[in-house]
Image (tube, rainbow, N blue to C red; front, side, top):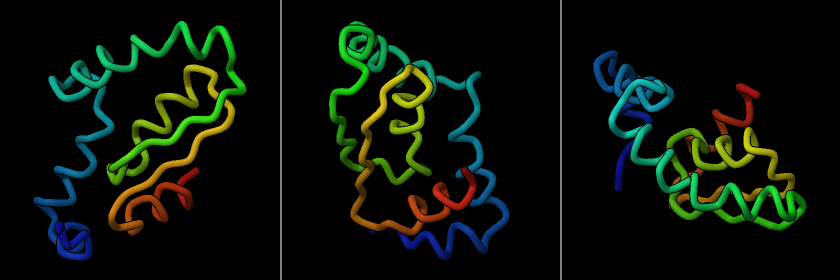
Length: 90
């Protein structure tokens, strides 16, 4: 399991974490391709309930769903450290 305290206290690793929010990365493109498949579902019923599994990257998948208009989202991860930080950043 990743020790997020080590990531947050190490400048180089913290930079990696912050890169997860950059929209000009291959990782973002890959996630966007997957998320595009659920856009019709959100457009059809934006009040459906969503659960992200392993969304420890500051709840990035949950935030993408929210930005697409989804209303009921629960993010989960084996460690809630970054999810808690994401909630504080709102």
